[in-house]
Image (tube, rainbow, N blue to C red; front, top):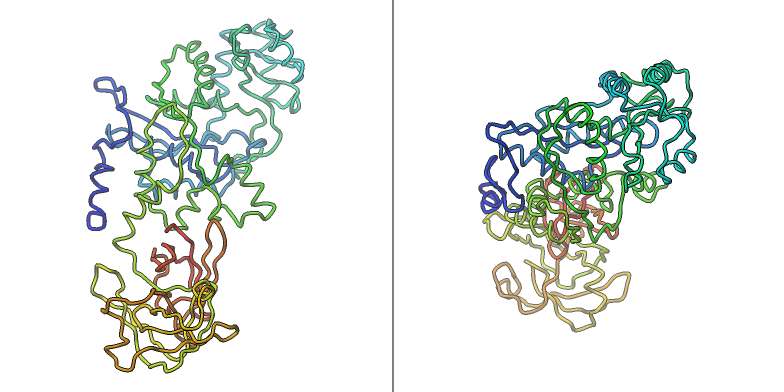
Length: 509
């Protein structure tokens, strides 16, 4: 990176140097900073998740603290975890230079949550409720206690143990935290902490070991305390979670972590999105998978060639503020362009290609630069036929003149399909060789139409799939980001030499 874009190192900062967008943390003298990112692994990291990874890891770096990746995977029914997503998050953290110091699986700690639930029951701060959902809602909305709220501690403890012993069925009983039943916000009134779930957990080591599962607010509250989390940085949509969790902290005499919240982030290109909505679209065939270039996941951005350096800077520059923001991915693309432009080799790619016959063609080898700032050259053989872009031919008429880049000038003879014809202009080499010569006509790109001189190229982009041909040297760039001239930056995803096929993913212009 120091060779490619040294200015970005200054902007992002070394491991402990502050970056431009993030405010200072409130840290006590001698306090060890511990932060966490806690996703539900029911799908891969979306842009919202990426923000959580980058910001929390960056703060841990600055303060020489600890960054914890915790999987809040205690909902095996409504938002069941995907086994692949556990690994995907670990890969994504590594890609973002945010390798966690600890990885925690909440589903490993169910017995510990039971212990704290029992403590709250013994304190008279939790009770087992048998109300139907609509019955409890009527009580809650009216600010009235349900019939089970006043049960004795011993009765609640016995009912709790019967829940654990599978003596009740799903939906028959929940454990609630006693709060203010007349709280001005109904969402904070006697919220549910545990419920019975008969759906097995996806993790093989868990499966059906437990039937009573904590809801997120309870699990997260206990985990944050056990992990020694000092600062919680997350979206403002979870502000109510803090208010609910503070009841537990107050009852058990714990100190709640310091908190920062950011507002909602709306990306113009994606609008509103959710992991569950993306999953449905994948299931019905709308998207090809979690790395489809049209979806707002890190897997998709990685496949398209959006670098971790650009993503980190983009997220850090957003800062941490409660104001909702609306922005375009063009901001991210501009940062990424700074990173990849100095190192991306250039190649000719022609989409929607048309084979053109050249009258008076000269057998030669064009030698364009691999990169404008480097001296190494590519070799592209040229004969009597080349591929040109259909868009370039559509607006042309006989007599119009063009320059085939790094080759020679041509004049349009006939644009009729299936075999348009052009003729080479000039009789001496110095008149038509265009390597250093200042162009006299509009420049267009081309690809040789010889059996071994090109590869078929498929470019998957957010707006469409482009099919065309490219110079053969593209096949040497597997896994790399390159620039198709006059088209944009792409990442070469696969190369099939036998069938002479390259598949690439579009990054941006």
